[in-house]
Image 1: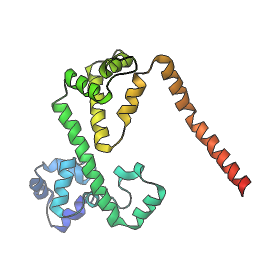
Image 2: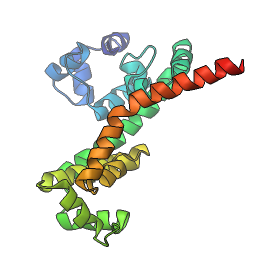
Image 3: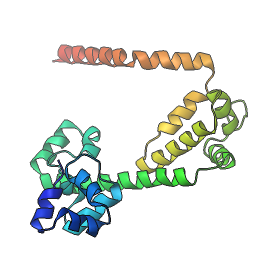
Image 4: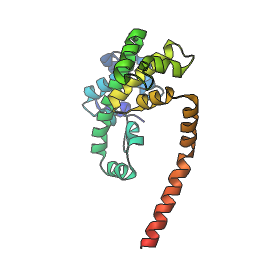
Amino acid sequence: MNRLKELRQEKKLTQQELANEIGVTKRTYIYWEKGERQIKTDKAKQLADFFGVPVGYLLGYSSIPPLLENQLSEEEKEELRKNPQLANELSDLAWQKYTVKMNAIENKKHKPASITEIQNRLNSRYGTNVHGDSAFLAFSVGAGDHDYEFLRWFDGLLDIDSIDGTNTADLLYKYIILDDDSKRIITELIEKLPQIKADSILVTNHNDDETN
């Protein structure tokens, strides 16, 4: 639960006064304070600045910030539970990164790339395939009967990878341009990976036992 009510009462403000300060309706503010609606990224930052607290603290993070939950090891999570201040600082960094990502997505919604822009981006990034076809042509053929919305979605995925430092779009591109037989082989390998990994761990443990 966020700390809006607690922070508001410390400043001796009514809900209407704080809503006016932030530039939203009283009804919207009440939704936020009760946790019935998510606070928009820009408003969360505005509220945090107004109260002089980290965004993570304002949003009620007492241990592991949700934006970091899946990115930390158990040891790192335990360290953050012991150090709430560090958790809040990391939460702010994660929130800033999330805001940049969401702004990029919003910008694409308002000014979507044209087919030509996406074509140039793919050709510049991936070049040609083994047959000498342009990246855009290979991608379009591999994707099959998809429309402009799918191309826009992939273009947005490239943006997210650029912000996060990930390579999801690259992996998807490499899969899409494969022939059907290769796609089938890759799919079968992916389905078998958990078992292969489990078998590998068993063999490693067995070898360690024999060594000891």
